[in-house]
Length: 493
Image 1 (cartoon, one colour):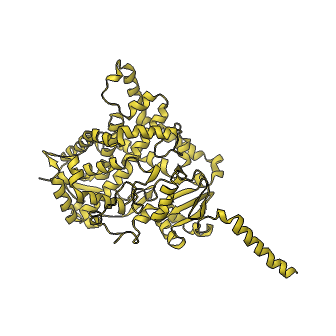
Image 2: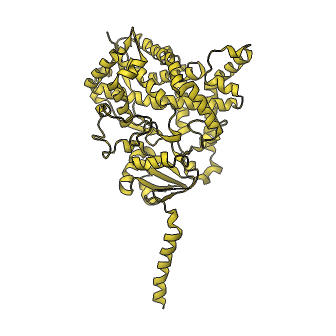
Image 3: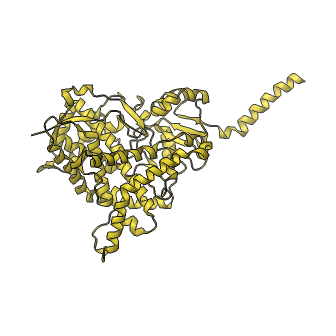
């Protein structure tokens, strides 16, 4: 009788587990001990660690990191489940606690808004009308051209053999393009490159990017929130710096609008005009929105321009092809943006290949399940953090021939684009939370890199062989070149 009882109990347990809890079965994944053995890699190279784990546990896996359940999609099929099939349910955002502490973050975000609410829709609509739409991009063509030519003319003044931190200079150029489109103001004085105020602004913007996108210990162990004085201090420090960046610009515009006797006479309104006239956004909220748009338009785009120039100067034959195409897009002494877009197919293929091989945001921006959902017969609980390993997918030999080689030709006869319709290629994400500025970014990259390659030859300091360029990467939400890009410009005939 006792023997029968001991046989019966396990059967009942299995029965209950299968029928009562089977419906809430999580995707497979490593246990806590296995996760701990990967902890260093998950911190410093998460895209690589998650790709390795996916080979063992499959393209849809989950694991516990502290109190947070992590769910990872590592194939086009699973990415599609989260970003299209169940797009609305996974449209939430997981954000560092520091971001939530910042004054003004509630209802002031396009990219980082926790959910797609009314304020998110309003800001996205305003951004679309001022920056992201085809009409806005055409209207802002002169801004891109003017800011890029400011940089070209500045480089023309360099002495022969002078070394330039090209990464910083491209970042400043892109920052001026977006800040001019948003507020009609430059953030950087290009001619003051290397001077103290230039360095301070560069440091300030980079610090805000780092601190608002990096998860800390408290994000995975909420029990520590009561003693997390460090995050509060960091948030207040960032708040002060964000106000320092945008406060004066906002107050100046508010004063000029107030003193304008006939504001309706203004031919066009930029982003700052519209959010001020709306009246529902506080100064803190406007500053947060501007900083977020600046980060979105400069950080990942700078990363792509750096890797694009590195890949081209390492491949002289490819560089020659690109320059031949660009030469056909010149009118007078300046590049014609429409000709760049319509006639430079190989150059565009090089940009697309750079976005594949060097995905700026390898795990995209973390998604959050706003409610419990079933995916591939697995339960994804509410508030799960969902990561899409776009880096791993873009280097998967199942979907890409010679997946780890820079090969622009693969895009010449391909209909794969960067708009998020092909799930094996998601440099800007896809679905509701796709980067709204993907088309703007592509145009900025075209104009900036096209001009730098057309007007200048580039070489390494001390005449080093370009093949020796250090290709090491560093991960900090985005994946950038570890060492700065230091090059010597020489004006081309």
